[in-house]
Image 1 (tube, rainbow, N blue to C red):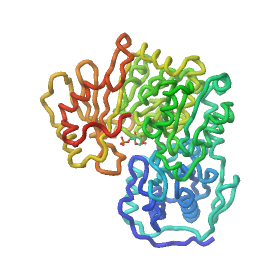
Image 2 (cartoon, rainbow, N blue to C red):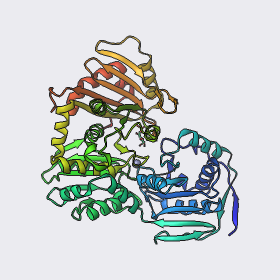
Image 3 (cartoon, rainbow, N blue to C red):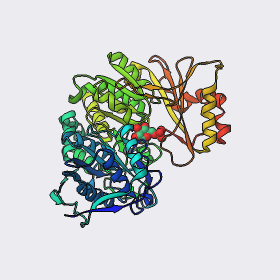
Length: 536
Ligand code: G6P
Ligand code: ZN
């Protein structure tokens, strides 16, 4: 088959961010746009000759078309094989698993995570390396350099492949292996968790709902929860993936998954409920009448992971992003294992996981995961919770209360000020950094800088930390994923020891901190807001 060399001119701004290249779908649909970026990826990784890649995405609008382009280009660039999820679907954690399990050179994942999908919404493409994790900055930097000078790309003149049938087909000299997107992932889950115990729970009167939000986890949750584990049909809500996610934001938090939250707070509440995002890496955990903050979820899972067969030998350590509450640190201390505080972004966990320093990781932004893959994993978190509930024979609320009675409670909330004028947001941060005279009640203010304990790399300016007398902490940072102006995130936490009052309403417990931060920074007046746009 003849390889075609086509010319292309560079596109502005093809700079991969925290999770690859994210743009409006119409931008990706510009003729040559995907081609220029994909050829830049291939050039940056030293070409494709003889290589094997995993290719798949979250099924959003333009997923199918972009995959056909990628496959033609991989073949034209000399790749030996591409492993593709049937229908072009692969959740992010399932792709990470396949890269590792099949020992491939890397993978191309098409997703804009929890952002809405559609021709006028968002699209994304990221490259993961052979450990299954997102490409580190050295690699994404090389890709960006390529995008600036790219002048031609290689492709084939072939018809679209039918990705609906399982099996192997050839495209030029390359083999395209179309696999069931769920099988290998489900097999991995079965090695980690006590499926018999969970099956006993789910068929023994315990009720649960899983909201797949019309995103990629639908087929995974149906196969694992309703199939293998025997949960009744109807346990998985919105289980059919749609190109526009049914018009919603596939973001599992109390705002975008409000119907699920309302359900657990109402009279018909199931014992357990959970949701995952567009590409299946985020999670939200709920119990009857209760929302579990991601920070508490990480701490509870760290304290109970040994109840699942895959973690029965104990954990090497626990890592959390800096703005995540310190609840997990208290567990690590009691277990006598390492506790790591990293900058925001899953990629910072990669080295700790590869080096065997951390087993569990988590972020306040609804991400939890372990060393089983190199991405966060929504369904994994749900299954670990179910395993814990099955063994402990307690409700979610009882597990949480028992946890707080053992370790104390870190009252926690994040307040977001969205679309703030970037100049004002930066000035607020700069002024906070410049404070030298500490007001009464504040012990320390610092700017978080991280030295990676594995490779020694340093990441500076990762957010401002304000430590109060009596153990409270506030963190302020600018979002790295916003699309409009600047988003100021204020993370608030107040520790109450085990013998203290563990049942205060969260926002009430944090109100004094909110006013102290406002006095310190002038946040509300300067941003021109009465309060946050979003509270998690
Ligand atoms: C993405 C990354 C997460 C990170 C989050 C933070 O979802 O995958 O690892 O925690 O962005 O976003 P932010 O807007 O706070 O920078
Ligand atoms: Zn995601």
